Amino acid sequence: MQFGLQFVKSTTAEISRNEIDGLTAFLFSRGWVKASAIEAALGFDERKIRAIAEASEGMIISGPGCPGYMLFTSAAQLPDVDQAANRLESQANRMLLRAETLRRRAKNLIAR
Image 1 (cartoon, one colour):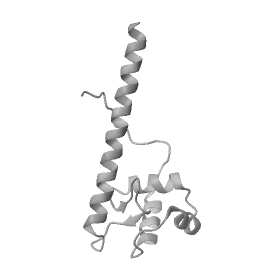
Image 2 (cartoon, helix red, strand yellow):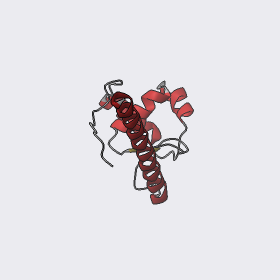
Image 3 (tube, one colour):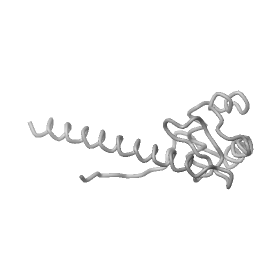
Image 4 (spheres, one colour):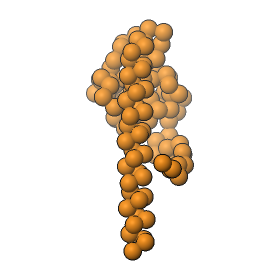
């Protein structure tokens, strides 16, 4: 399988150091926190929360199927971290397969 991947940082949401610091401070010693609780407390919508988590360089644990967002500290349970990473990898693999399928369909249309 060969993919023409170009990884580009998202430009849709500019994330500031203050936003990362604000969310990490909010998550400190709280365990898993749902996006709705973060939105109510900090005013960030779900898309912004995801972007902040992505920009946190691994300090904020989250991913598909996770019960919310959690700060990665020494108190974080290894199974939580491992499950979040596994879910992200699984999602990435599914997205890559979907992209490959789209490219293959496009090539077939062009070849006709």
